[in-house]
Image (cartoon, rainbow, N blue to C red; front, side, top):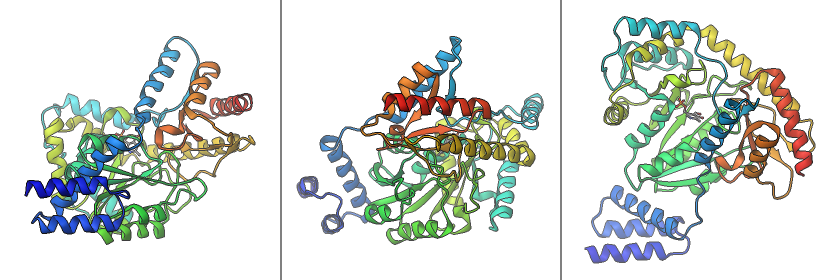
Length: 435
Ligand SMILES: Cc1ncc(COP(=O)(O)O)c(C=O)c1O
């Protein structure tokens, strides 16, 4: 048996087109012949393919993590007294509203500072289920919701709950870099697909080509970080069909769903609750990045698994934080104000960047970002961003942080109108000089 397995392994990793369906079907048949379960066979192949690309594939750059170091440099420059305009992170400049701060302080003073359930407190889970049911016309119950340590643990816990080592996770780029870091840390096989500016970031064709029987999870994120793309219901349905065809799960990261400005935004909850998981966070809408609170919504069994992962990693989310999140849910005014503010700033960014003949930029649809394409040959987004920071005191995120997008920059709508216009002016002028 071991010998046969080793033979299969060497055959799989020596084949030229490793990911074509024919190879995959053949390998799966072979595994079946060896009496291996389909699930185990898929994972084994996933591990082999991952090992193969580690050994022979192009070396991956750790650009996503590089952004942290870059942001640290921008912070350090500000601390040393240089007036850096910071547009490189996805962190709103507004803080949690007074209602949230008061609720957190009150909860601490009332003693809500003990261990709590890993899945989250019932009051908050119930409130989320109720709000989402009303908003999206669905029927969610408390058992469909787990509270997590921000959207970050919502994704990590979901990948852990829905897959095993060797399973393939499909990520649509440009993407928030942590999806791939998390999946790799969990021993999953990461498969990236590329979407393009020219095709208006539509992922359907590339997904059809890439998704296979190996695929266990497809992660989607609309409104998107970094492009701001909002997906219409028809396209979302097409993605769900692709996933359904191969029996894959869809994780829909909806941390920017409130920041939708073209009227088309759809939650996955409106289309399907079968093999889908939706996640969200309090970080962006209410400026609560440091509170570290978010949630997942899915079938009760899956939600329990996410909670179990959280139990192992961090025990629970502090209860006073969850009580603050409850206050946020009820402060719709604060959310509305923040959403309008970001929308206004995105329009300013669009207006200002459109003034340059060296920049291609699409009208903003959602999220908190603009992801322009720079029309200069051999443009290096890292080199440019570093020089812009040191010489012009403007920090933006290099497009390379989000995949193979070295001719893009991500600019966050996290400053007021005056500095935002000034930052764009400096970017335009620096590009002229750079070109
Ligand atoms: C697409 C996306 N998902 C999830 C997160 C995680 O946010 P948090 O952990 O603060 O909730 C972020 C943060 O920038 C993000 O951009």
